[in-house]
Image (cartoon, rainbow over all chains, first blue to last red; front, side, top):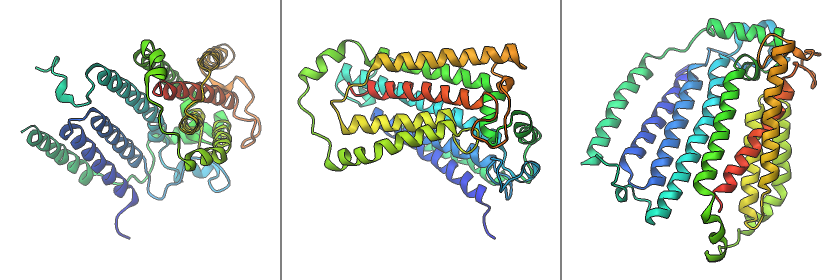
Length: 122
Length: 229
């Protein structure tokens, strides 16, 4: 039966990471760089979730479909999911701080091109 | 030239990640720690959602740190975007285009549903997928839509910051109650576990979830609102 689902997820996440990295390196507009960071972030989250998948596993929520005794055998690993919830919030926070710096930089120079900010360049 | 070096760097990352992708094999069983969590969260905490049990009790200190990070970000964004620009912006800026009919009418229909759904996600965190952070983010997205649909709407920052601080203080107080009445800081077992799967169950987890939801929702709303001015 072809590719396992977690492998598809993993490769998608890794590709998104590369797309995000390329966005960060190739663009000169600060907003586009921030979008690149966001895509990189999302890719890493997808990779983390993918590594938590267990063959034929289901969501680690105990209900009629997944009795208590069954959970140890047929649920996916809940730890990456718990970590990703944390990581999403931190990613949001970092994006918010980056965007507010972008607003301030635009106020200072009236441009969003990273080439206009040469003071801290070595 | 810069693009060339960027391409080389991405290519090198691609080689590393290619190794990750080809070396990956799907796991047949959860790790030992995960098995412990899967067995103990329902038995010990009485929570049906294992992820919420881990987040709020076993990794509660981590969650507290996360809330602290969110608070710092709200403060940073306020520091960077608040202040002198607020007064001049409203008067000097040319009148912006009003929101389209689709956005304003859609908001009227969808907003109450989003708020309701956010509350549902917050208070059902111990039973099904959801929890304080997720529900708080849903509520904040509704606030974002409201800000788009009604640019003139003013958010009451005083109320939001009081709600947020109060939720934070109560969250830490719940943690200290766990320290006194149960096994340790942020231990949710000082309330009775109740009937497994019932709405009021799983000790203090729904309470902590609700406090987190209020705190996260208020904080994210303030951050969204800061970007408007």
